[in-house]
Length: 157
Image 1 (cartoon, helix red, strand yellow):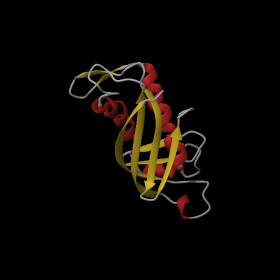
Image 2 (cartoon, rainbow, N blue to C red):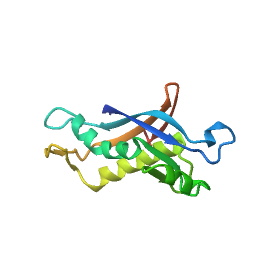
Image 3 (cartoon, one colour):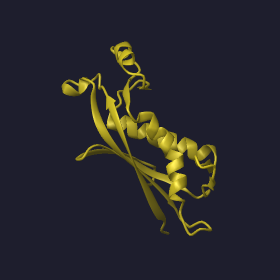
Image 4 (cartoon, rainbow, N blue to C red):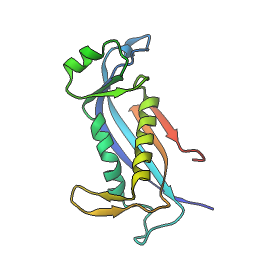
């Protein structure tokens, strides 16, 4: 049996430091992230949609905003105090460097958690969107550069 898929893409400016890297990526540096979120369902809702794009945007945007204009580092980074002193916006990754792979998995897990915690999403405008119970997160893809991306895909995706 087939299914429908929709995707929403987000962008964020972000910096990170890869403390385990042997070359230049061990220094703080920036990227323009492009994040693609793909959801799917085996049927359409009463509005003939898998999910309203605005609902998907509302579900994901707070996570993207956490990364936007922030510096991401490993919580165990030996230079953590110096990074925190130079930036008001620091995102800590527990036990791992914020590589494309760990960031995309974090996004996938957080979006999945939000989907599991409730199917009503309130947009900033106050409009309430109902996410269908059959809606599934299929994958999240994160471009770190125009030519490099990492992806996390749901089992069976």
